[in-house]
Length: 248
Image (cartoon, rainbow, N blue to C red):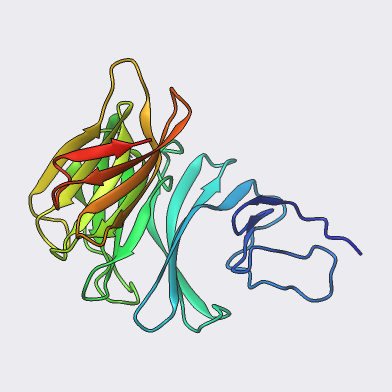
């Protein structure tokens, strides 16, 4: 027999989100653990913009979008796996809204040095776009703090890392440029330093960014130059990435 499901995105199959990334529509045994399913009458997209981290206990924590296209709502969900294979888990809504452009899209999750998950997400309140952050109150994310603003702009392709100073550093695409926010506190509620790392007149750069901390302690960011169809690697020369050199 063949499966009647189609893999549409990583770990997202026809309304079900699977740990293994595969699903069986007709098979007697399911090779994955479904994180959620929806009624056949609902018009729901579950599992897009999936981000995962592994906690100090070896268990996976993840965020992903849940969109009800019939109701015009989209939410950002958090799932905490309760065992190594995630067959048992707990889930909760992080942000819920009627904005199906920003809510739940391009969010990023990381672990603070104390093991507490931190979520950075694009957000739109009425007509205002912003990049916001919230912390879980426990390592299992049983509750969240109130959101605080990193920058008032429209951000996408958000990627995060913990700097050598123990504070989050966030790279994102905004206004056709690659920008970086460096937090002055572990929960990112204090001051932030915003730097434009790569901006070129009439060009669009900084898409699909990914950030990591190099062996020298400075951030390294890989991203896409959409105008010239190039992969670019930027090496920051400061902890906050206030300056950087780029290599194609």
